[in-house]
Image 1 (cartoon, rainbow, N blue to C red):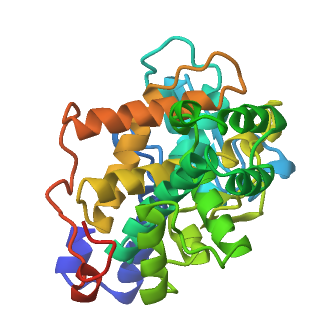
Image 2 (cartoon, one colour):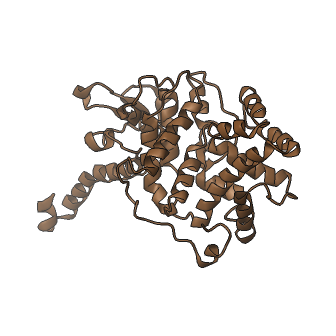
Image 3 (cartoon, helix red, strand yellow):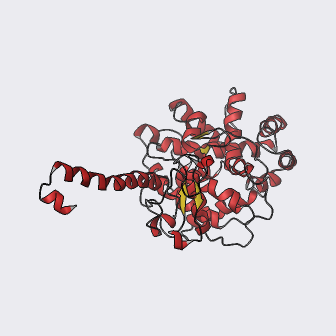
Length: 372
């Protein structure tokens, strides 16, 4: 190759050299896709030099017409003599295929991780697909205020029967009947509400605040300071702070549930675990992680762009902390991310890339009620 280029070879020689370079172009283009959807802490991509180059688009490895250009599946795991593991199929749903490959490299801190295989790939994809380069500090703070506003509504329910009735009506569209009953019983005493708030997911409290404002726009948000600040932001930045806009920025993909990888918050009830195909529905109905990380970043003064490094790393650490007691143990995920968040607040975790990037709001925003 070097000889042909340096000695100004003939047209035929140059065409031959170009043909020899074609496989490298193919590997580069495929590799860029792999790199874009790389799960946090990926091992296979960095330690198996043949992983990308062995991608089998035509399915010749299994000689099955059903697999031609379909969603990729992992083959060759545990067979180093054949070059190791590789993917067979198209690049459709590549992010999930890579997450499925990498999940086995994450070591759980606890033995009892019953929902690991059916949930971890979705959590990894939810931390990999979203990008926050264009998210503004106003949007980041609005995510925090939506969660706090929902918590204030729950707290206000203990002393206001009208608010309590409205809150229960809204949450009936978001919670399972068993959880709704427990929440409803907790709303009669302030002490019970305080204990219950810790068990409410960020997606539930955010949905409560957003839906309450939609159904009862005449309310002035007098039930708490966060609600008042949220209304101030909504007046000054109606587009950025709208729930639809935040849903696109901080949502998760639902390729099975909504047939799209576009990120959004569907606000559906948690799907029960049935295994097999439905396991993806089980994982896709968890929508709280990015909302929690966004609030954590905002309260600690990080810029939105820092989420691009914080979210994947924190998600991977939270995954290792999942300690489920049954397949449908949704609170186990919430406990894991809360524990990870507390460690990060206390500086017990190693420093992450972008940790020195602090939040800088615009001059107008600094004069608003949302600034601390």
